Amino acid sequence: MSTQSYTPDTAAADALEALHDRSVDVLAGFDTMVGKAEPEFRPLAMRFQELHRRHSTELAGLLAAAGRTPGNEGTFMSTVNRAVVSLRSIFDDIDEDILAQVESGEQHVLDAFDEALAQPQVPDARAKLSDMRQELVRLLDEAKAARA
Image (tube, rainbow, N blue to C red; front, top):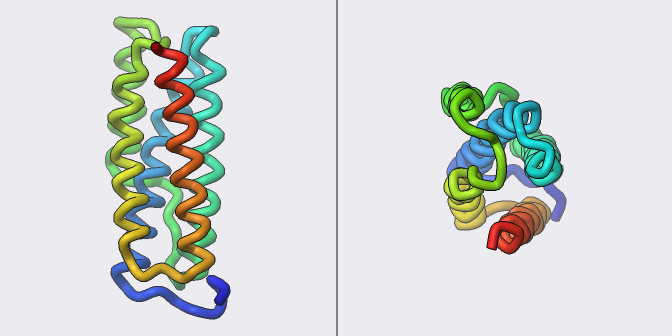
């Protein structure tokens, strides 16, 4: 069954929308972080940025297939994430010391993936969500290993 031929129920679509919003929110922080990151940390920040940019696009497609119009601004947390990174860059370097905060923020995204996967998603959407979640877990594991 394809995502084009079946619309998920309201709870499933709501969970997709929440996940998309969290992905856009986190992307906003990485968009700011990449520009302010120390050279040795910038490649990792760029990998997270690219992952969330791609995931946001894929999630927007899933939302459209579910009959929802995806927003591209995220929530108020997008503004908060930009501000936190900008303020931190004034007082401290944006380097691997920020990874604990990155991991905490990414846990919110993983929680949103789990909530979306707990809903009755269409099979194609479920497979994409599972793949995206695993990509994020792998990148987080790489970041943790690099920090250790």
